[in-house]
Amino acid sequence: MASQSEKFVGIQISPISFIDEGVEPLLDMFENRFGINVLLIGTISWLGLKVGRRISWELEGWPDHGKPEPYNLRGGSYIRHRPEYYRNTPITNFTADDPELAGKDILEMVIPAARKRGMKIYPEVMEPLFKYAGHGSANNVFIPNLPQLLEVDVFGRTSQEPCINNPGYRNWWKSIMEDYARSYDIDGIMWCNERRSPIDNVLAGNAPNCFCPTCRREALERGIDVERVIIAFKNFYDVVQRARRGETFVDGALIEILRCIYFNPEILLWERYWVERNKDMDRELYGIVKWCNSDLEFGLNVWNRNHFNPLRKAQWPWAEMATWSDWVKPITYQHQSGGIYTNEMNMLHKSVLRDVTPEEMTPIMYKFLGLNEAPWNELVQKGLDPDTYVYGQCADAVRGVDGKVPVYMGIGVDAPRSRADQAVCTPDIVRRSVLATYAAGGKGVVYSPSYAGMNLTNLDGGAQALKELGLM
Image 1 (cartoon, rainbow, N blue to C red):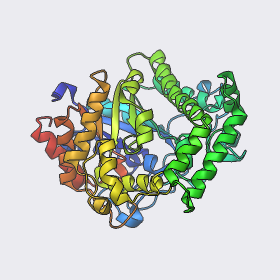
Image 2 (tube, rainbow, N blue to C red):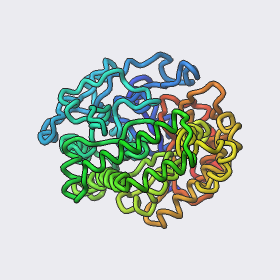
Image 3 (cartoon, rainbow, N blue to C red):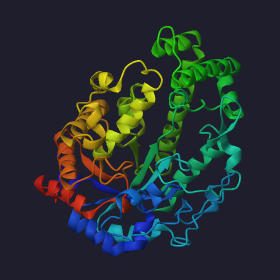
Image 4 (cartoon, rainbow, N blue to C red):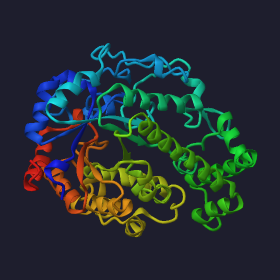
């Protein structure tokens, strides 16, 4: 059980919320009504979920606070531009010019008021930043030179996301971290990495990535035959596409896909190369922050697909992530997660699991993933139960990090729904999620994904739990 001195009760918040509701009134309410003492502020994004108002307002209406109107998001960086940090990257013009926030530095606005109240502050940043389905992406990204940094797929086509290996893009992220670490009185940075790997992309129906000149050169330096990899992935993509179209295979879809991987081992070789380079980005950013200021914390906001997808769960073990973080925040948006889980499994049931029904596979997949939830046909409507799901994922993370770093659970509060019949967040769900976190050995909570989309009445459920725990 965390003590008052170790208390970590955070909330993720968009910069627009401070404009809509005022810095001082908002922080007073966070402190006095909800017992919040940590602010995780969206400082750079082109996604409404991170820096805008509620993105699901057409389905769910507006929350019980803030401005009840759509936000004309253009996106960008919501802090002052300091060009001296960005001389080693082609991305130099990315300051947000949203009318409500143009010319403002959200950290300079909030830090003095937060420090008066003893609150901790972390810029909250997530990759990918741009065209991310389901996250309220801005219509356009007005960054000169960015198209030159985009991925190239296996067919030689320019893709939609910057290549993580491109030195211009990678150095840009390093510059951002240095800027935060040197320019502000903060407690650390929360980083989230939500990129699909090559195999993950193929199973989702997308072309595999990335075969740009940088990725080719780095792979060749590691002794990888890139041309053979391209042939292998074209074969793999073809088999998965045939499975997704419903083609009949002599031995079934699973065996046909495994056979393809067996005869094309370069698929796994490239997958490991790409995933490890993705992890390297995390490790490098951790090192940049620590070099600039060893007292700053580097927290990892960990994708819920890491515990819903067996491949990602294998690739991203907690013990490893604990070596490049000061704390971890598993994403567990319980009421929304029935829909997230079924989306994940529907993807697999179109390809590798095509020959078994979701109803048949769900109890088995639960065993593989350590879940114990509602049957398949009730998942979306019921969501995942805090007493089993939040508790189980917290306990899993606590075991995984093995005492090396604390676990702060990402508690879903009105995470945006995508279906009218999807489970709705309630005060009791939030209350039980907080209680489950501390019962499982977690050291704190972060209300997520964004205050702008939360109902105050549901946050009251978290406050009730804190009172029961003696933390408020």
